[in-house]
Image (cartoon, rainbow, N blue to C red; front, top):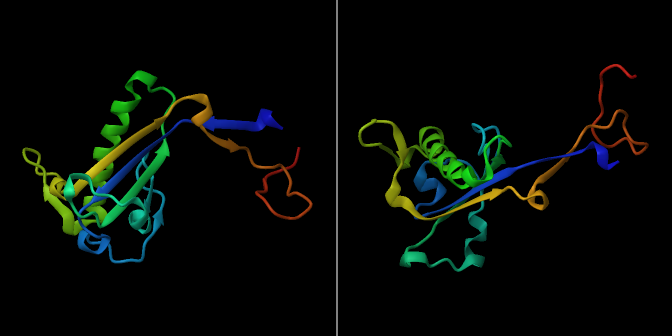
Length: 159
C-alpha cells in the first residue's frame, strides 16, 4: 500500500492585517479559496482564530488573518527555500490586491504595479516544509471504487 504514497514539499505564508476582509474589498463570507496562481495557490480567511491568538504585536489592532498554502517544487534547493517562499508571498500579495482586496491596492513605486498596501501589514510568517516528515502525503486514485462505493474512481479503461 505505501508504494502508492507520494509526497510533496509545501510552503505556507500567514498574514496578519490591520484591515478586515470587508475593508480590504472582499464582499463575501469568510472563505477557503483554491486555484490561485501557483505555488501559494490556496487562501483561507482564518480571521475566526484571532480571538484565540491574543495577537498584540507592535500594539496594533489585527482584523484579518489570511493563510496561503501550496506546493513547493522539489527543484528548489533547501537552502534557497526560505527566500523562495518570501518571493512567492510577495507575488500572492500582488495577486490578492489585483483581484480580491482591491480597496487595499496601491501602486508600487517605480513599477506602477498594484500591490497590497504595506501599511496594512501587522505581521507575517513564512514556512517551508522540506524535511521528509513534514511533506504532504498524497495517494494515487484507486483503480476501482471500494466496496462502500466511496472514494475516487479511475473511470478510464480497466487493465
